[in-house]
Every structure is written in C-alpha cells, then in structure tokens.
Image 1 (cartoon, one colour):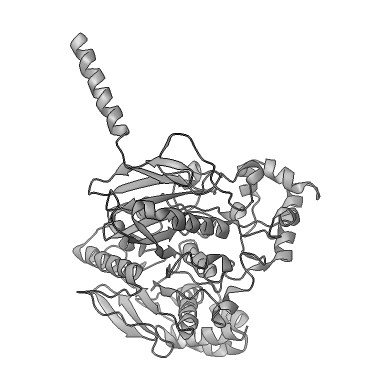
Image 2: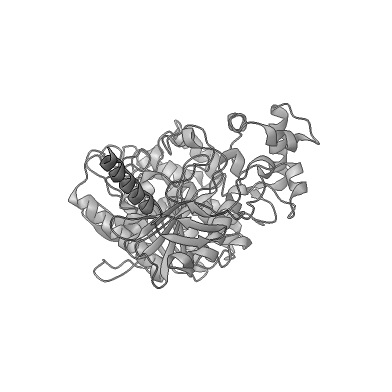
Length: 511
C-alpha cells in the first residue's frame, strides 16, 4: 500500500510539473501559460484583449484589460460571443455568452526567434454568428509555414451593432452602434502591443477573413481608427459593398432602430439603457433586429463605397476573391429573377436581363441564373469593383476565384466558405459551413498547400508569388487578371465574368 501511495504521489508530482511547464508569455494584463504543440511551437488560447462587456459595459466600447494575479491559463478557448443557434458555427450558441472578447495565438517556434509576419483572422457568420474556436480555424498548419497566426472573437448581432440615443450621449465620442468594429480594432491594437512577445512583427500584420469577416475588414479599411494597425488585407468572399454592413445607417436612423427595440421590450425612454443592460442575454437575442453598421462620425465618417471610389481608404496591399458558386446555404433565391433585376438595376436592367436570360440552364461552374445573380451581386462583382478602385489608387492588388469542387460535391459546386478548409489546411477536420470534402484526395491536399503558400507569401512580403509557384499576376482595372483554383490546378485568367460585372459596376457607380 505504501509503495502504491509513493508511486501515486510521484505521478501526481510529474503531472503537476507538466501543468506548470507550458510556455509562458507576459502580455497586457499579466502572465499567461499556453501549451506546446506536438509538431513544435506553441499555442495560447482564450487571451482577453478587453474587459468582459457585461453589466454596465454592455454596448460600451471595449475597455482595457484589468491586470490579473499569478499566471493565467491559456490552454482553452474562450466562450463564443452571444448568438442564437445557427448553421455557421454548429454548437457555438450553446457555449456562447457576452464574456467573449478573447483571441488565440499560434507560433511554430518556441521560444520566439526573430520577427515573423503576423496573420490575424476575423471569422465570418453574417455578423450574427460564428466563432474563432471552430475546428476549421486551427492555426497550427498555417503557422507552420513561418507566420504567427491570431484568431479573434468579437461581439455579434444586437451586441455588436446596437445604437441608442442614451448610448450616444454617454459615449466620449458621441457615437454608438459599431461595437463589433471597435472590438476588432481593439484586438488589432492588442496585437500591435503584444505580438512581439510571441516572435511576431507588429509592423508586418495581415488581417484576413471570410464572408462577414471579409466585409468587416473591407469596412475597416475606410475607418480612421485602422491606420497603422495592419499592412495587408486578404478578403475571402466579402466586400464593403452591397450588404447591410457595407451600407451603414445614419446615426439618427440607427438610434431610432435602437429606441424601437427598447419600446418593443416595454422600456421607457430616459431610463431605457439601464433597463436594457439588466435584461438577460437570451431576451436581447430573441428581440434582435437585423444588424447594420453606422456612420457614427467616429468609427465611420462616410459610406465605405464612397471612400473606396475616392481612393481614401487605408493604402495597403489587398488580396481578394470569391468562390465560383458563392451562395450560402439558407439563402432564398429570387423566383422572378427578371423582376428582381429590374428593381435593382434601374436603367441598366435591360442589359442585365438579357445577360442572365441567356443563361437559362444551370452552368456547371456558376450554377443556375438565380445562383449566378446572387453570387455576382453579393460577392463576385462587389470584389471586382473594390479591387478596381483599390488598384486605381495605386495599391498592389491580387484577385482569385476558388473553383475547386471536391469529390461528392459535384452538384453543389464551390459554394460559399468551401475554401476555408483549404486555406487553413484543415481538410481532415469536420464542420458544416466551410466543411472539408467528404473524401479528401491528393488533389485536394495539393490545392490546399498551394493556397497556403500563396496566402502566407502575401502576408510575409505583400506578394503571393514564390519559388515553385505558378506566377500570379497583379490585378489591374483593364485586364482584371486573376488566378483560378480549379480541379486540374491553378489557371491564369482575365476579366472574371466581365460582361456581368460591367453592368453591376455601372449600376453601382451611378448610386
């Protein structure tokens, strides 16, 4: 018995020693202890970059982290931000809450050596759902290519985009409604101050994201608060045009929407904000209105599309693209496409009706006419226009189209978010939105490796090209050259759906 106890104590001591032998880093707030990775390097999860936005801090701008005593454990993800059940992040809603302003850091080298390029991931989910802790966003494969990978969470839905006259009044900036953007900016500020502790270069930061994440990044490119926080942008299936996020409300309209929500909840003006802050999270979520960003005079001073058109956005490198059948599951497509086009395009509608009318059959790459319209006007042509404006301002720009269709998904095509597991190198993981192929082939792995090299090369140097890679030409407004990731391999093309996008751009520029 005594021998057994001695062995048990020894094992416990070894376990305790192991628990206290993880990698240590000192960041804003104090010390954190992460975990070593099996293939070398380290990961630090659930690092707070702001105080929990709860109680009196609900809807406030992110407040500085309060110092903690001792060593904080950083081996588990923080909670996803409050959200209702959704397709974008299965299981996230059940674990979500408002104490969610955390980020995660992966590095392939520990202890840190030198200054590595930094990639900061902003996840998508319609700005109402999603989380950085999804298994598809495992940062180890990308960081293994010589970058520091950071993933962040930010407030969503009615907690990320909510304006109210009382909120504006209490704000030191006399602004309200863009909490999600302020969270993202605060996370980038944390990176600027702390990433050198992990071996990252704060002067070489690429912010990248998909869908709502890409839209948000595009909008951040037009915010004065973003200057100096990043040097490059990768936007996957999302532009600062044609969405509620990219078409912000005026502050007055946003405040009226917030007051309407308070009235809906039976709260009186004058003390509504106090009462709203006392409501349970679930009740706020249940009564949420559609989210929209706000021209608040602080985060945003002008409509993002006008900033891009005038060349007043942040002057950084931009790699941008979409998927060939970029339609998200659950999207209701137009039954009467001609009528939808006429209502949307006004005087240029006849040209568009003629174009889509020619596509009476489903295209093997781009889908049905309704799917083509949805992808063109929401993702594809919005990206072409944003690239055109950004290139015209003298910035290095690169365009891609992801058209890889894995085995078993021939009918669906390359749908919205299908590139994610290729970019992150997580083909063997399980997910729903952005799920990997049902059967991974050598061709899938080759496409993934190629995309990862292009993405990390761009993050390191501002140019995706490198030794052994097919040459990816710069985008320019005339040729509109782009690279297409296809089943046989990458192809260099020009003028992605140019006739369709020309009509879209003509309509957009007249507004």
